[in-house]
Length: 87
Image (cartoon, rainbow, N blue to C red; front, side):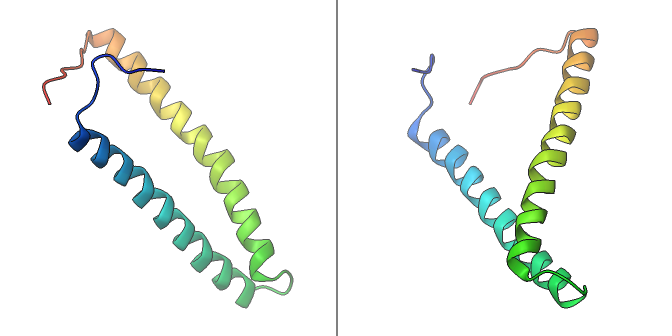
């Protein structure tokens, strides 16, 4: 798929680095939470807790994102909000 109008390299770099940073922080936070849960629970090692944490994060997190986007779309349509592309 080709963008129209095409993003500049600067905008592409910032978009990509935002995604990389977000994924890295989510990974680190899930590791920290998994270690904490494995040390403070009676069962499961940190790998199991990491898997459970990622599963919950991706399913419930995506549901929350979907609901927020739906609410914002509804508000934008009601208030006739428009996006400006002047980057």
